[in-house]
Image (cartoon, rainbow, N blue to C red; front, side, top):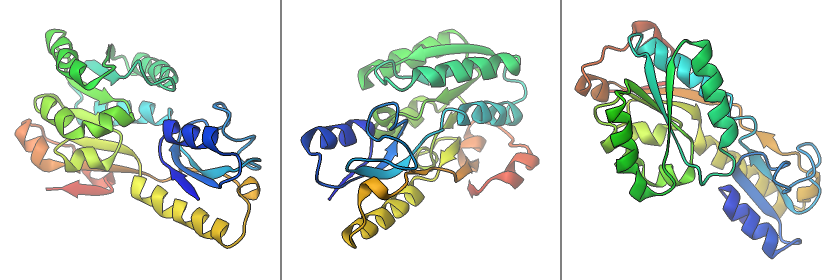
Length: 234
């Protein structure tokens, strides 16, 4: 049994074996990437959970960011050009910004050493808020990212960023995905075939707000937004 989180890990496992069962957890578009035949009937030795569709959450993140900071008109979007699955997210953010009347600045960072430059670019362009791509390399640098964003209201993709000092997050509940992955592991160990286990799409999204960070930014979160938050860190 192999449990793989991100796309690179699952692809490497699939390249290594076509017989050992593989349970994926946070993979985006497994059909398009050739990991499975379909969500309902995966076929081969891979099953589990997918983040499909996730790109649409960026439009929601933009709406929440605008609601929290109505004065913000220029929004930066930090993404990684090294992430092959990211271009659809860029297009959705661009479309969402146009529909909300926002001036969008798209800034790329391929590697950790490019993050400081990316934030200098945002500062020079006078960005008033920031949206960050859900990306494994960014997640690994979350403490550094939240430190760099200490003067910029930022919306992240998962709770872990907010726990590290980020302002907002709206996205998938990752611990829940791993708990669900354990169910697949159990079924396969009990004799089920991965080819017959339908792939489950992530459906639970949560809004988390860090009031301590809001205070440091001298930002008042609208009561209507606080009331809708799944978690508030004080």
